[in-house]
Image 1 (tube, rainbow, N blue to C red):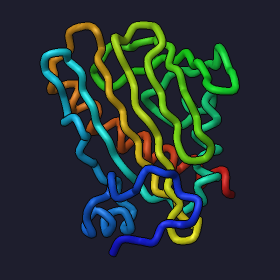
Image 2: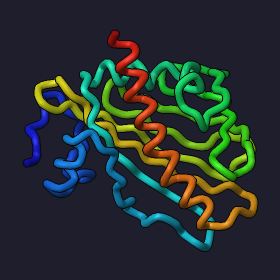
Image 3: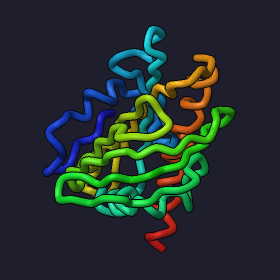
Length: 192
């Protein structure tokens, strides 16, 4: 059964992401759900790969937002992220230098531009560094009267150096759920 979203939900519809009762059922059981991306899982010609996943966290969206907004703490709980340093912060965006290691992929350092819309969305995109391109978003939807938060995480990347496509797809399939579980654990720790 599709839950009733709380008032104040972001303009983008949750139904754009979670399209079936079986997905809601899996989320309610505490599972991470891998979602289809609107542009498919990869574009072979430019070596662009994308993945998207969802989790239902037992916390208000503000509590989840506070974890995601604390960008420099992310390496403490996301295994693939080795470092994160804010190098510029304005009213509209934050530039963060990150070093990431996704499975068998080489370690990369890059600057990503985060554009937050509190407390519903964080869009991010490549600014500079080792990666050819990296972009994506976090979306936060209040569920069950703000008692829970549906989190959607999308990541699209193009390394800019040769990596077999199956390696990138496998890394994304593991790293997206791992990141969502890590956020869930961090929210739980902060609530204690």
